[in-house]
Length: 320
Image (tube, rainbow, N blue to C red):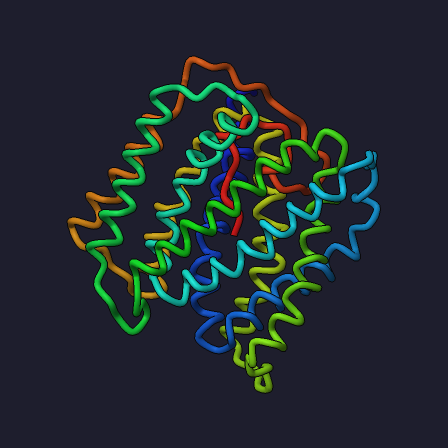
């Protein structure tokens, strides 16, 4: 019975990883029909509408003096700056390479937690970080320009900056989740993103959508509903049923699924040297994992982003 009970959480975790990986593909498809700022605003707006139907799940928050500055810093990091750099990355590089760069997020969080939160950072973590950085640089240097990826090295750099924003966001969330419902913080992001990207869209001279294009339009709906709500909900259910240390191993499948979906849907391909560079990224992530530490389980409060839950920083998934 115990073995059978692991089947459903495993399926949920795998599905969540596929959904996160598919977000890169959905962005690429949406950008083919609509301006990037219109796409990001549409995604945030649709997610906000979804949260209006889930207001009862947003209760259980305790405000303390000084929390506002942390909440503001959180939304500035993500979704505001994060999605700006994410959009520029998808415009300039392939979905496959952008997905590969996300594998560096756990390492960035671990290094930042050591500096800012005084958490222990081992030599293995530092060595893995340097190896992953080398792999990402090699991946970018050996990228070929194309119509779908006019400036891959620049796009990969933008994706790296997006991961830096996600790191600041994750570190801030580690502090806020002790007093706030994670689902409430997720809703704050969605509403703040809608308010931020509406004027950005209007001031950027982005042409407002005036025609319905099926694939780009449904890609925006997919991003707002299935990725923002579905992927995070499935991940949290999985983590609530199996140890977080086991669930975090699934996160490293995101770049793999992204490469596969990029090939299947967009026809993207890697060269042999780029596959070797990707292997360096994975090797860096693998080396950085300290398997001697025991990671506690946690129970999520409803459909919430896993990054908000009190899980060790290296177990946090990337957000797209």
